[in-house]
Image 1 (tube, helix red, strand yellow):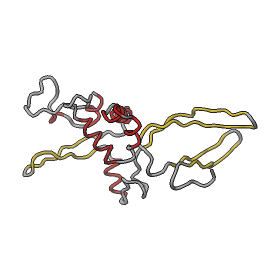
Image 2 (cartoon, rainbow, N blue to C red):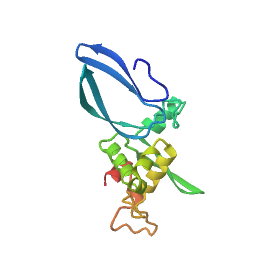
Image 3 (cartoon, helix red, strand yellow):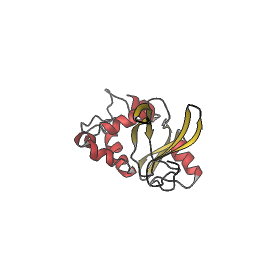
Image 4 (cartoon, rainbow, N blue to C red):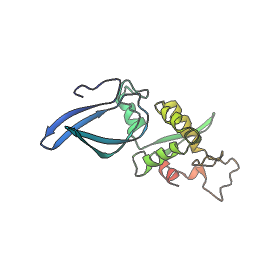
Length: 185
């Protein structure tokens, strides 16, 4: 199409040069988070062809004013979306400490690991269509990820919670300095 639709998916030809075409793809702010397959379909007369171009991952968009996770302030986007290092806070109400943390959201394999977490959660295994159709809701995604980080409930999660301070078969939570090593285990 020549005019992107604000409410749905659209593709706009940006440039055409000989056998090459540059196309911009636009997704709606309500699109579901996940991996998508991109296929080009062409036709000349009665004959058509289909070409798999590749896959891409669609995430929430803190830059789009209509996206639920929109952040108006550029400094907030830098801190909450783009910054790979920061602080996490832990403790009790009267004693809170900060710990430097490597979030590592752009590290190799992390995006694939996070998508795999979504695709192995019990709600997905019970009803894939329902689970995937709810992945446009950041609250839903947050709840699924939060549940999957805790593996005490036999859902193939990431970490086992321990409150007895005995970590012979694992690692003390005070030893961790980032999310990457945790997610890659």
